[in-house]
Length: 294
Image (cartoon, rainbow, N blue to C red; front, side, top):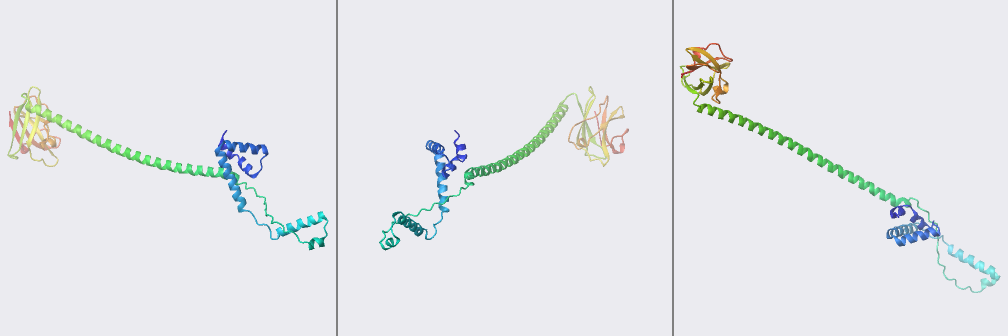
C-alpha cells in the first residue's frame, strides 16, 4: 500500500467531513490505527476543520432562549389540559437553564482538500528552482576554472616551446663551437695570419686552409666595420693570381664566428678587400685591408 497516495486521495478529508459510509469510516479508522503517518495526517485535518468551524461560528439571535422556553410551556399546557388562568396563577417551577447549542452547517472548503498536495508541489518547485540555480552557478564556476586552466596550459606550452627553441639554438651554437674548436686544433689545417695593411693597420684575421680537402675557414680577430652597402671579400692568391674565395658574413666580419669559405685548390697567400655587397670579379686594391702568406 502506498501511504502517500492514500493520504493525497482526499479520503481523510471526506472522513473528517462525515461523507463516508460506515464501512469506509471503519476502514479509515483501521488504517489510521495501523499507520502512524495516516493517523497524524487525520489529526491535522480534523484539527484544521475544528479551527475553521470555531472561526466561523455565529452567536444565536437575541431572545431565542425565551422563545424556546415559551414554546415548551405552551406545549405542556396543551397536553395536560390545564386552564390558562390557573396555570398563570399557580407558581411555576423555575426551569433549569437550558444549555444552548447552535449547530451551524459548516461549508466544505473544497480548496483545503487540495491544500496539502498543492503546498508540497510548491515546495518541490521551489526546491527544483534552487537546485537549478545552484547547478548553473556551479557550472559557471567550473567553466571559468576550466578556461583559466586552459589559458594557463596554453601559456605553459608557449613557454615550453620557447625554452625548447632556446635549447635548440644553444645546442646548434655549441655544435658550431665544437666544430670550430676541432678545426682550430686540427693538424691538417694550415694557419695563415692576415696582418693589417696601411688602410687598417690594427686589423687582424686568420685563414685555416687544408690543401688536402681544399677547405678554407676564416676567423676574424678585428676588422673595421665596412661602409653601408659594402662587404669584405676573401681572395686566395695562387701564383700571384687572385681567386675569389667568398664573401664574409656580417657576423664573421664582427668576429662572432668561424666561417667556411669557398674551396680553394691551391694558394700561397690570402687577402681581404672591401667590395660592393655580393662581391666583385677582381679585387679593389685600394681597399686591401689584411693579407698573409703561408
